[in-house]
Length: 145
Image (tube, rainbow, N blue to C red; front, side):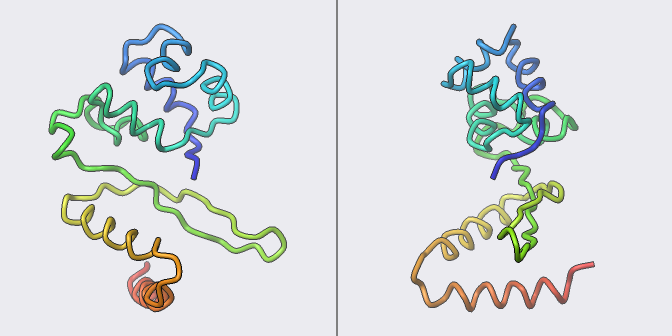
């Protein structure tokens, strides 16, 4: 999934005290052309955000939203992580369409359970996956606003 956040690249420049796009590209191990393409499209792959945040000890929440503290004072092992909440809308003519609906901050316990759930859901061929998806849908439908 790509995040549509063009201002995020501007925050990266500011946070890393980088002078230009070439310096940003070098900081994250990409070509200046790749950064230029991300900037033009306004789409940034999450791996780029995570790498930058780790390299410069910058809050992922701040990079994504511009809110809160820029520095990750908690350190890399204790930080909370902002994630995009993704809702899948199936378009019968064009297949699936993914839209980021917002951000949520996970505490350390939630991170563990989300990780465990992703591990299960990514086990292709597992007979448990359809059952888990069905249960998640059922629980979601009972609690969604």
